[in-house]
Image (cartoon, one colour):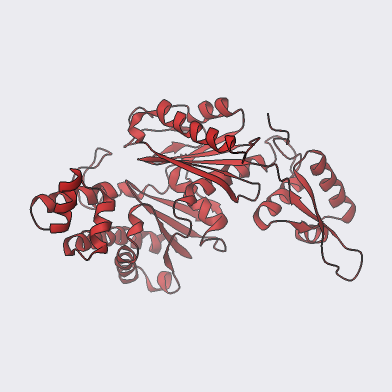
Amino acid sequence: MPRIALRPENAQQAQLLRLLRDHGPRSRAELGEAIRLSRSKLAHEIDRLTELEFVESGGFAASRGGRRSSIVRLSRDLRFVGVDIGATSVDVAVTNGELEVLGHSSAEIGVHNGPPTVLDTALDLLGKLRAEGVAPDIHGAGVGIPGPVSFREGVPVAPPIMPGWDQYPVRETMSQALGVPVQVDNDVNLMALGELHAGVARSVDDFLLVKIGTGIGCGIVVGGELHRGVSGSAGDIGHIQIDENGPPCACGNRGCLEAYASGTALARDAMAAARAGRSPRLAELLEGSGALSAADVTDAVSVGDPVAVQLLRDGGHRVGQVLASLVSFFNPGLVVVAGGVAGAGHSLLAEMRSAVYRRSLPLATGNLPIVLSELAAAAGVVGGARLISDQVLSVPRGIDER
């Protein structure tokens, strides 16, 4: 079991811990100024956090004209785990208290293999990282899955591309296996948290993260906090209908954005183009592997295949159309584009920008950057660590937070 206490004892301790997580080691003087505690009260809370093994000394700060103030840092033993379950792979990372990745491992496995197999794979990956010595103890885990999640219950709810996962007790299963607190959320929400903590959105309080992969989703951050909605389904833009007579979608409806512009849709349209002889490059890739993926479309784009370029532009335009409405409605300060299809880079981004800037209100887009994720594959696991650290470094319900 972890030696470090599972939760701080009061709101002042929680403030101190989150400040150290988000901004790194600080002198006692800087901490006192940041949270406005008296010197004696600050000393008491830091001493108590030291006893609980949440924090430790980090030496002395440079002199500010008097006695040198000591540096306080989070315990070097604090460890969080981020688990990012995608449609076709699982990523696991271990971070320190400041959410710096100390070890990262992944495996290719389809989510359709079912919860026991996929979760066991995640636990095996974590076991290998722990065997390498990066996490003698762990203090919490955040898990992302590619479908709607009841955050309160920690279970998936009717996820379209996840057969066998509906109402599966993911949080309970992982918590029992690890013996630590676990939180479960939609994978796109975790990516948004990752970008908020360590990516391009570090200094932005209101932004959207659009993930374009096997599916399409959107993480919404308002005032520096993740917005999940009443039931946890906020941001499910992949199932906004574009055309009621459009192609069938995995959700059971027709003409959803996901049915036009997701990685699955790109692969479907690429297969049709290859079989019709419209793209020599895609036909060559199809002959070599027997099937095509969104990555094959990106490959064909990289060599200038006109059909692949048009497929990507069409997808980017569709996403941009929906995003334009969201931008006019929400007025974010930033849009971050992530996911496997986003690996196509600026061809996709240019089409999205064009649609948004042309269709949204000028006041909403006058100073709106639309950029690619900096963290890429690490966004989800960093977000998972951020998610669980928000719980572990907060005051338990029922304790007076004054």
